[in-house]
Amino acid sequence: MATNRKSQSAAVWFGPALKVSFLCLLIAGSAVGYVWQKSQIYQLGQQIRVRELSLKQLRSENQQLSDQLAILRSPVMLDQRVHELNLGLVPAQPSQVWRLPEPVAAPENKNATRQFAVRPTGAMTQ
Image (cartoon, rainbow, N blue to C red; front, side, top):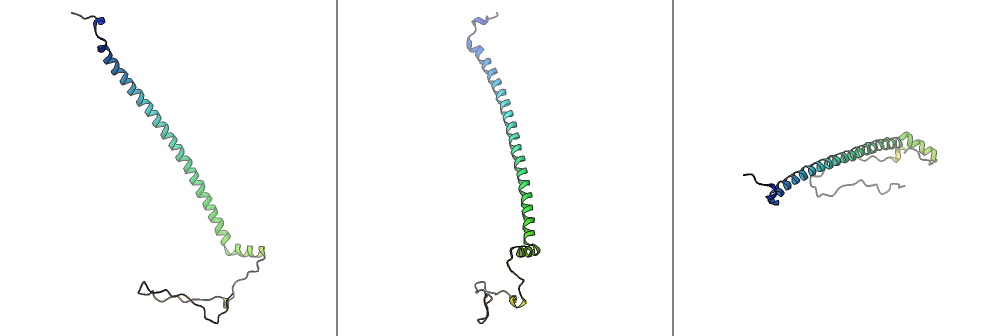
């Protein structure tokens, strides 16, 4: 004998409806999570790209400054600046240069005092 739908309880119809709504929420939540994750990946890629360009620019600027420093430290450029500023600097005379001999061997005792070069007592100082 067939049963009438009107005579069935509401709990019988509520169970499948709850399962379907839960399944729909799960699928919708997964889709939203997927889109959010892709958005985050895109934003992080943009940040990486911007920082790589910044790093490339900083490296280029660092190289330019290093080249400029090398040029400014060159003897030709230093001599030119001395003449521009009228500093009156001249190369050292051979008598003004002190040559110190290299130590023959390192002391065996690591706690031994180091020996430094000392000027003779009668030497002129400037």
